[in-house]
Length: 195
Image (cartoon, rainbow, N blue to C red; front, side, top):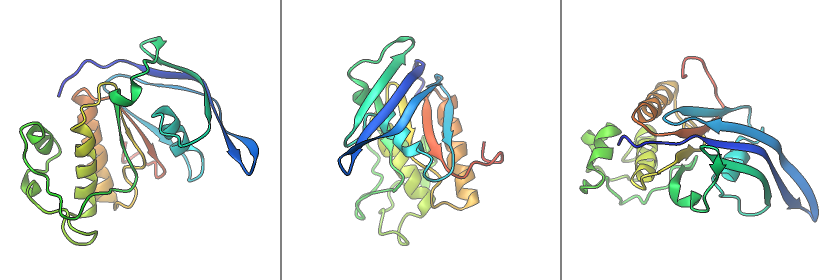
């Protein structure tokens, strides 16, 4: 899955939303970058604005006005951003009857995610079928199948996981970054042990 990546950067990004008829600034002059082939984390306490910033960067805000500058290798961001990125949500949402079928295009992803042993398993309902860590791996795999050309966004990839599963998911993300994927995630339980 080695692909040449480019640096994604943002400058002076602000987000204003309308709340009860009044404009409220949720982001104010945010700046940063994601280097190619790296795992970058937005860390902070709950309510600090991590998900809001991630959603704004991924252009997934349902409302509001985003201002600022977005660049790819110093050039203005192309209008095709949504087709160049994929987004793993905090909550894993899968049909309970789905399987991780081995189609030619996803066999490599199944192996990369260490899902070979349960590739034919039925997802099932939470608590039955795939466990929480396996569901998170499946969520990541679904987005990897979209072949993000620029960036993979993950919202709280360790949410709901125990410490061992959190370490396993972050090890997987480091492996994906080392393999050529640029990753930006939010995380509310930062630990030197995990990074």
